[in-house]
Image 1 (cartoon, rainbow, N blue to C red):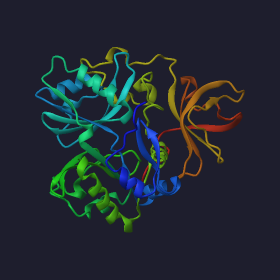
Image 2 (image 1 turned 90 degrees about the horizontal axis):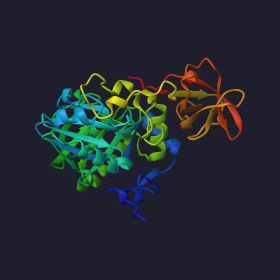
Image 3 (image 1 turned 90 degrees about the vertical axis):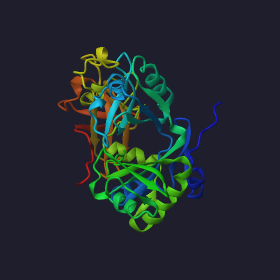
Length: 368
């Protein structure tokens, strides 16, 4: 039996009274106080999340850009230094091994952040695709911690944190899906304006040994600005409202990008990339849709989507009673001829059919 893994912030979470759950082999905080309170704090003020379970890979070498163009579905050689891009790591059969974010750190150096549960699969795939390229791939996950600060107050809080200095880009000039270098207590810190909540915010990559001090410093400043520690439960409802896919739910090895609404991520006119010849799904392959309903009964992952006569036409991948919107929302894969909304659909909630309406994603969009 594999021993559970903990992040460098374990003692902080325990001191804050966190409840833990297994996530990709890691014991992670699922909540500290209340799922709803933590969710609303991120929408209205700010939340701080420990996401140190995520995996990091350093890609370097004279042909790093060309290698990533072949290894991933996007055109990463065109990414400017200082910018980030969402991309997909595909298998030869076009299925999704993982969804990742790629940061270009220097002309010949990139950083890839992938999902914790897919660390080994990503590592193996990246290593297998280096043949013929002047490139090196290093798994640096254990050297770093990753902390997310998300919410409308995120920038104001971080700008006041003692110890964060020497920013390469001033706070007010930092752009979405871009990063800045800085120092925290004299040690390197990467500030990425990315996140998984639908709110403004940052993800902070710091040496594992400095993670505790950074966590404490952010909490100390944020206490008067509505910042709370937030766990996986709030993170899940936040990303669902924002229409963001979760690997193992909306994305799997059997899912092709276009089915999940991610066809735009694939640069099909590249001369080659792994999965290119098989990336187009079958015409009758199920497609991802957003569904909304009235009342308080929400569909959950695995619940059927049915027609009025009970005929199953799909399955919910993620669902919840939206804390922000106050009604049930879900993402589901349905037969393509049922995705237009022309035919009434229903959640099958333990034998009760709940009318649902197809809607465009995301369910929630923050005010700029």
